[in-house]
Image (cartoon, rainbow, N blue to C red; front, side):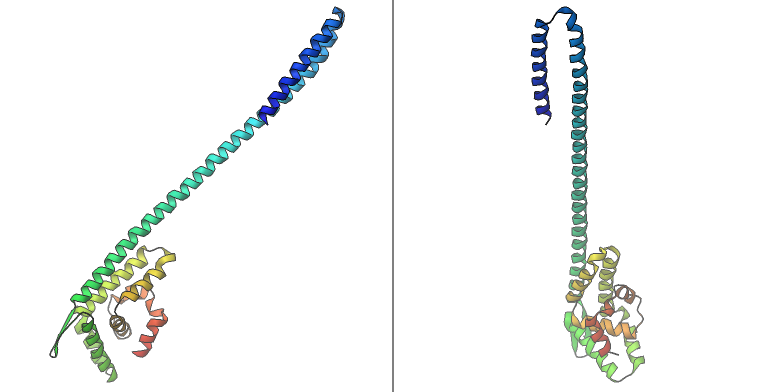
Length: 232
């Protein structure tokens, strides 16, 4: 548009220049004054109009340049935020999986020495569960509480404490929109016998470490409610 305007003005001025001097050549000197006033009176407003149009065009171009720069800045900020959020998520997940791996390794090293033999790993927690189920079948609550107290420094307590740290890490540092997924993932990686023992401890015991599981609201899940109802 700007180029067309400049070309048009150039053509117009050239035409007026030609017409002016053609007329001047054919007029007497006393007629040149009014003619000059006429032409000047028409050219000045035209030039003023052209200047205003060019100024408006310049302002529009500058405004578009500013808007484009602002849009680029907003897009850059979004990109930086996305990259920052992704880095934070990757760092959190790396720490979480390291913690879960440590917990699973500790489970492998767990052992329960009994007269019938020494049980290790998942077998140890399976044996723990058999002991508690036998106590609960006798409906002797004091025996259950005493057994829990005896195990408060044993492998069962230590491994539940490890997972309590994992759930606390999730509730403290995971994004709200991701907490549910991380909690579900952690539960799926826990041995079922350990989850059952956790529900027994929740129902019959008062270990401080249970607070981390309660904060994560894992006992509100339908899958764990089945365990809780079974061991009531």
